Length: 242
Ligand SMILES: [Zn+2]
Image (tube, rainbow, N blue to C red; front, side, top):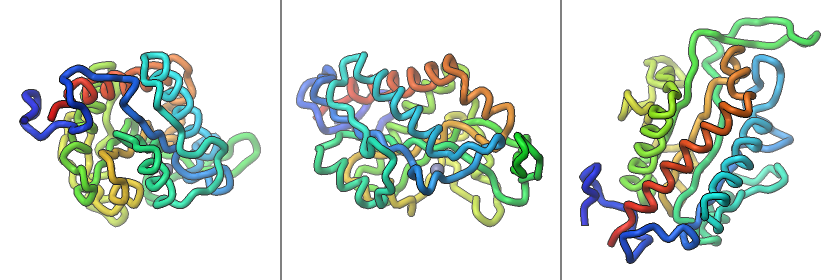
């Protein structure tokens, strides 16, 4: 069967057209760990702490809308390897994997500044979310469908995509497959290519941007962000057919 909306094969988990939320297993990955928190925000906070907070909010949002089998791959911030994360998702029979991250920029764009007595880095040049999928994922087309759904809901709810990962410079140069929805192809992202289920990586926003860091810390902004992802997951679940 073809998906009427996008003309691509649809999710194969369901045998009925209607989404059975209580059967739809969602793995949420908080990117990085407490010990190795990833990027450092303009105000000096490690990316992991943003990731884990959004992951927890997203879990609550999905559970409150009937997705009772949603789980966090890592509950307590331990440093799990990327292939371990995807193995856990497989063992728990996840239908989809959502890896939550917050973004930075290339070093050439970072400027020094002092914040709370610390020497830190920031960049006001770029802002916005980005979505990644891997064509090496076994369910690449379904991963792209998931990314399209998430991007469409984020745009509908007022979020803006950053296109900085498409810039043709060292460290970026990612193929931009959907400019409007902010979707990039990143084939060798380990958490995406080793996942056996449709998987996307969500960069929620750029935490080295002072203004965007403030937005990303706002509970109303966070709520709308996870609402958008939940709406997209509902849509792909409802598209399920075989
Ligand atoms: Zn990250």
